[in-house]
Length: 131
Image (cartoon, one colour):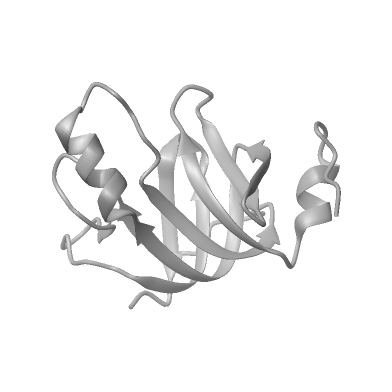
């Protein structure tokens, strides 16, 4: 499937597909990869059946050279679309300087999966059905 490079149709064309999403530091948006290729960037996105993934090898590279940024934290899930409203879930965060994994914001307990995740602008991650 070919995705449009610009415009709102790129997200609509990818609904129902499995994707990996990470925060793009330079562009201040979420970068979305489908089938291993970065296909578009969005300010916010909603995913279902999610897994929080930290690449240990890339995280070690980040720790060795903290001035050089590498993508080591991903959220993998099925694209639902653009979020229309908050899901009233728990806040999740990833801080590579403090934690080796994604954690709940309130109690800093590790999280690995969630039924629904909404990635809001400004790096706010809201999740429901956390495990």
